[in-house]
Image (spheres, helix red, strand yellow):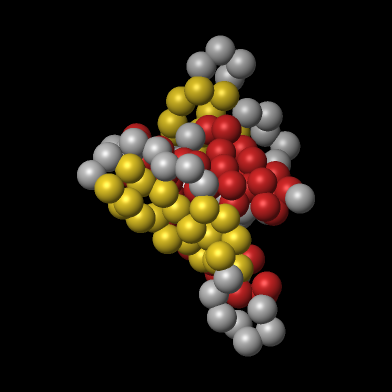
Length: 136
């Protein structure tokens, strides 16, 4: 189930970009290990969702969104839409579309990276590229 959540480094980058959607779990980096956590009674967080704004002052903590939550956030907040596609039996790629690139709101191809061998690697590559686009 852990592979359904974005890795810690991606989650931290999303937090820096302003991702603050409720998530079921969060990452804890204590300087030695990076682990998942689902409850934290002393701070008042609950299972209805953790948000990054509750963790700003806590070093090493950030929400752990599902891949779909991250993709939804890019679509809803930044109008960046993605398509993950199987090219051949062992090749996957992704497309990123930005509606704001054209006045007619037609899809415009922003990027098509090289092929990777698995769907999971395509998801990760796509999220990394979305973060790069937001940082530039």
